[in-house]
Length: 275
Image (cartoon, rainbow, N blue to C red):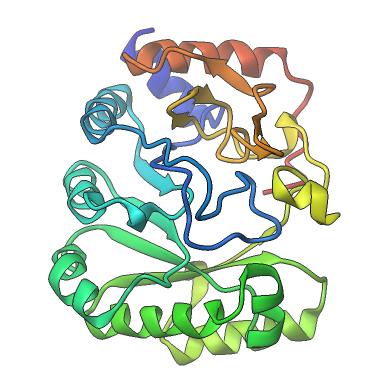
């Protein structure tokens, strides 16, 4: 596929401007609704750093405008701070993280380098109340996430809060927004998303049913291939869902983009009911 065709598809919204990398699947938490059923006990399944950077160069050439990184918990990787910095020198980056690993020493020695780069660290906090948050994300996770968030803010890093909507309780969301504001996090940096009934959420009886026409079309790369959306490469009871896999081939990125356009052409009219 030529860069001109890719740029046109991105401009039209057929493909989102952000490309996602699943950096690894291992996590220090085991959230009850996790799309990838990540935990401390699953294999790492890391996407090689050199491969990520090569794909990033392809993404720039093809006209993508931003990167996203997720897992698992990305910062379990030792090379993660340097990898984020390298990507941010190409395009803006958002990293999804639970924030519980951000000790004062780690922030000062490893993450401070990101303060002057276009990097947003999106911390998962589901409620202003620790009890509500921790019953789905693990005991103590709320306090640790907020401590990490405060350390990042103190070092001048760009921080977002990402909440998974567990219960449709407007007063809970209002309290969470107030909590975010108390840390100076406002506007588009307050992210609220629905739980999707995939991965661990199925066993927990949580989330909304969503097909490929209901999730954002953002090309997503994992060790298992290229997928339609960051909601696509889910793992349920140890099995990878390949229903929204575009191709096993991830390099060069052109092949994945071409496969994504073919996939999009076969979908019904997009509803975007889950955003």
